[in-house]
Length: 199
Image 1 (cartoon, rainbow, N blue to C red):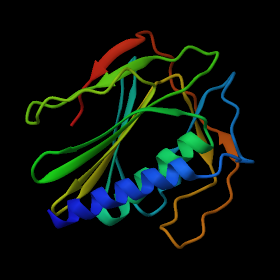
Image 2: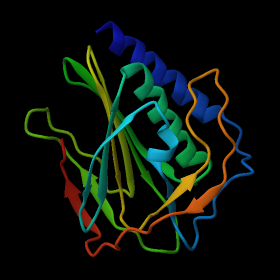
Image 3: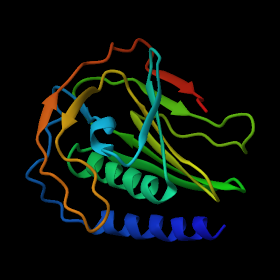
């Protein structure tokens, strides 16, 4: 319980820091013709472990795990990069307490000339009901009372995953400077409005 209270305080502090961050970003990525998403696997460095990847017609789902002390700031930092560098808009933020763990969810969209699939993510059977709006990216992480934390990353398959040399560094450590290089392009989606539940 104490860890979740600290996590809530961290969540509120990071939200206010994100809101007050300078808007000028010399590394801003143009998203007009080739919408991109930074590779989370590259960004996370040694601070999380990659898990399963699930590919559907309407979304790609990646799961990561790690220590609670690493996962919360890592996820928050990645969301900040999506907004500041990759020009995504946060349209929904939710924090929910499920008893022995908390779940923080960011739902993001991207304004681009290329049409992207939208999807929503909803609850599994053993949780109270919840659902995200229809979006292009969902970043969700858990903070347990004890044990392992998880990051769930969902995104539209039309987004081109790029290797971004900016990697996560915990507060107080220096990040590398960003440049973007394209990697593979996921298979385009057919369904533009679907929902998913992966846990």
